[in-house]
Image 1 (cartoon, rainbow, N blue to C red):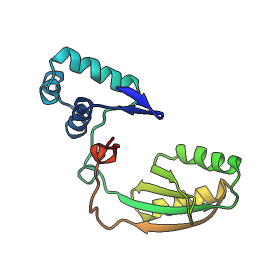
Image 2 (cartoon, rainbow, N blue to C red):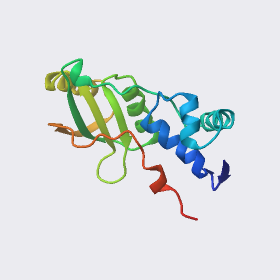
Image 3 (cartoon, one colour):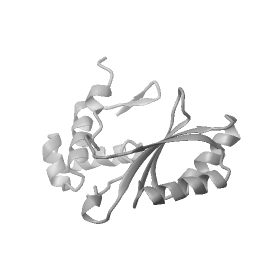
Image 4 (cartoon, one colour):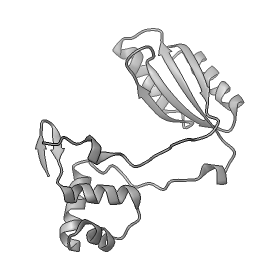
Length: 166
């Protein structure tokens, strides 16, 4: 693993380790080594280097929420009134404190943020948005999109398709 232009250069074995972990996060070290084509010790050392370098940021269980609780997923486009650094910082700090906001992406173009809420129902969502508006965290406009059904919800990143060829 080398660094080039501020990015790590991974070889095919590193990529195999990452792909395997994305598919099977609970795989044993021995099985991971087999899949990567390495003996356990060198595989473990590579895994530790990937973790230490921040390439692997965590291991998570994927929960089938519909089996546990009633929920509604809502995507919201949000635009701020002002666009100074302090305005963005205030909004982002507030968003980090709301557990029902599970994703928030700063965007370029016509909106400032794309926010994903997971809530019990639309009423709960609206109460949260009303609280955000009265908290005066800088929201100018928002547009709500209620998810009716998931079509694709991938957790695996297409790492091999994003890497430079040369």
